Amino acid sequence: MPADSTMVTEIFSSIQGEGIFTGCRQIFIRFWGCNLNCRYCDTRTGKAPVHCRIETEPGTGNFCLLPNPLTAAEVALRAGELNPSGHQTISLTGGEPLLHTSFLSRLIPLLPPARQGIYLETNGTLPEELARIIDGIDIIAMDIKLPGTAGITPCWREHEAFLALALAKKKKVMVKIIIADYSADREIEQAVELLSRYKDIPVVLQPVSSSRGIPQLAPGRALAIQARALEKLIDVRVIPQTHKYLHLL
Image (cartoon, rainbow, N blue to C red; front, side, top):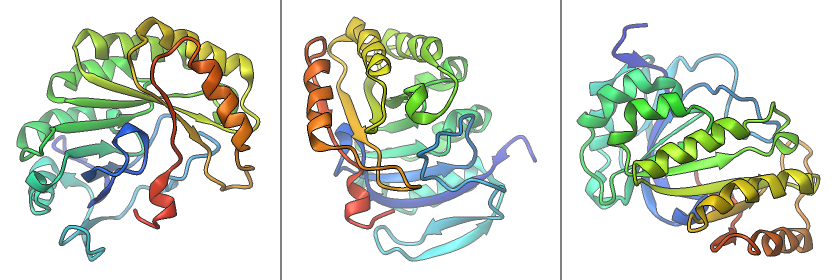
């Protein structure tokens, strides 16, 4: 693969369905591949996509296909055709976009301006890669992965280093924690303890969407988790994946 190209799954305009930017209009640039394999993940996995789906007009759901890999210039051109000035941000998402930092370092300067800049959606486990591009990022929406809930190796040290870097660079940061009925109290408490060092960060508790046979989070448990988190944190919200209710991308 050429140095100035990478695998992009899709480029489209929609509303953000997760976190504190829920309801905001964004242009999404979705990159292929992830360094984790969370049991509840709803992103397509498997072989790299042969084509990238690109929306031809914002919000229409009409797509064309371009062969992968795409160059930074091609991605910037296609994102620009979706009218970034009419969107709050351009979202770099995935998968895990920080697997593509060499590409992002070329892409970010080429992207036309959106109202609030560049929004990075990340699993928060690659602080060294974040350091390579952080100066071009305006907003960081990172996950804290509860290892038992996600079914992965613990990432506490990576999360801590990631948060420290983002805040040292004075970036706007929000944190999302995906929770399920089976989430362990001790892991939730560990996440809250980590975040209590930065009390003013908005924290979103996102119930696992009903998929892959995972039972829905009971409302009472969601409220109990939020109440415990609010004992140490200032801003804790329970927000589901709203785009799924609206049947949006």
